[in-house]
Image (tube, rainbow, N blue to C red; front, top):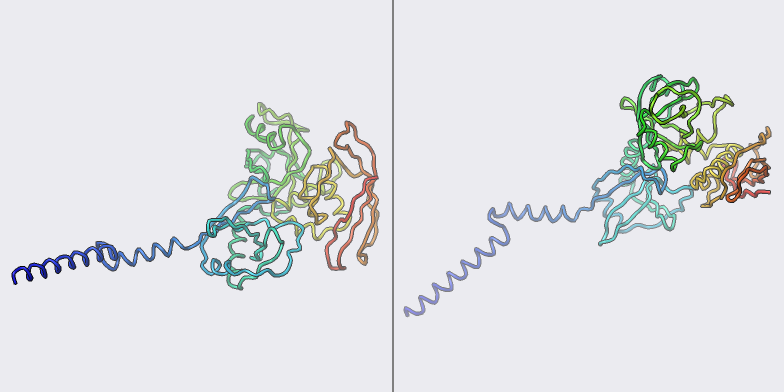
Length: 379
């Protein structure tokens, strides 16, 4: 009898110990509150963090990033269905990145919040709420990444003569300090120091160049969209900066010293620095489109060639510039057009320029559509 009571007491102690251990495992030392924290921690762990990245071109080193969470987007990404084709000549400049089952997923995101598959060029349908949330995120990040597009008159007031500012190349991401020294129709600028001159030269691959580059001009909490070249010329004013002369920065509507007219290549770069390249190109006349193509060929700029033709292509020349004037011709009722343009061109393996003629064939789908260059044959 005594033995039976001892056995029952031992069993009770064991059960009590097991219940205590289970209570600690399930609830921790603070009971149900700690258990709730554990569940919320697991829920947070399962929430996907999305990353947005903006770049002016796919290979640009200069980029802006932001992160956000959106559970509804996360659910909809599990059941995406392909819709219409993405018809713009360039992919979206904004990429959505997230991790799914150990793999990194990438989608292009348009300014309107549409998701684009980079491989199939299909637009994926998402709900109105998700698209609006993406649109808000994308537009905020693009506003941070690109510059304001101002007319030369307004830009001149923002960066008056002798002001000092930071200049950032939107491709390399390299920045240097400069000062506006003069300029009545664009800004004549000089690097402040030897280090700034060296950075400018690095942006151009180690050699001074007339090539146009999209830049951001940052001064007094304002960031302006501009276009610069990298060739020292004209008057000097800052001694000891290893830069013999000045270089030029153009803004919307700026004109050059010699022609007293807007330089097409500079104007393209101003719009690139503002994040408006595709929309700008889509409004150009056939003649202006040809000028952009020539600029792309002259600078080896594959993105400019692609945005004018709608196709990925490369033109291998060392230099090219237009010689002949464009005819005054009404093309408002045309869907197709051929134009012969005289150019000065230095082929890739040649040492001297030659005069050649390029036959361009252009077309558009309707009278309301934009023009594309469908072929350019050098004769």
